[in-house]
Length: 255
Ligand SMILES: [Zn+2]
Image 1 (tube, rainbow, N blue to C red):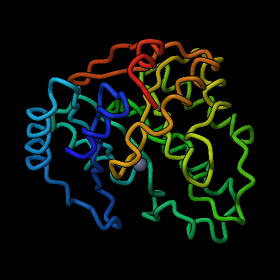
Image 2: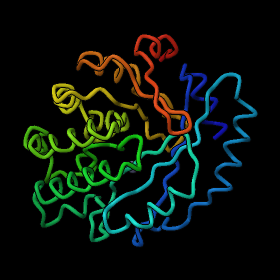
Image 3: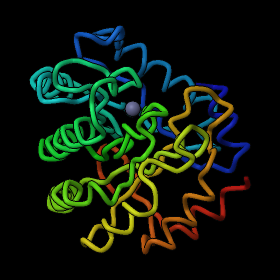
Image 4: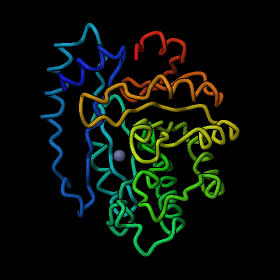
């Protein structure tokens, strides 16, 4: 955490959320591993070291699908965070959406049930933002690279409607820019359709699993958001949302 905070300050990032994964899917090797007390102790330690230079949020990326919903609800009702991301990483049968999952499946077989689970995640009302909205594109093997979000617009519109009705944001996950899709998750087409549907709430995340990528892709993402008609990014304290304008965010960022 300390290395990531140093990297954030160096990149001109003024606020960082440590969204450790919380897994309840029985097939996940990290299932039930999460240690909340240790996490919050580690957050307090970096807050006392970096508190004057950086806002540090206590946060979590909580895996969701309908088969584990009861466990997720129990977990979230017992925890206090600034910010909670809800993400779908597994199909309902417990298979992780990694390249092998595409074997013997069409893109529709992967994306349609995935978006159904994302919509259910939004409808729970348990999450402030939805992680990597079109995640399967990151793991599509070479045989399945023809993903075009336009093919799923009919499945995305009900997701947008649920997001807007519930006041839930979704994340622009910049890791896609430095990985195979070479575009954020989601990319500009989906952001544009969401704006056309009346949506305005997004968060930005680098999905950094190491200090080297803290802040990566944010300037490009802020440009993309403005071009798509999003003037501000959602920020959270104690699960309460406020909007920070993109010009204000850009003033901090140096890279
Ligand atoms: Zn994730």
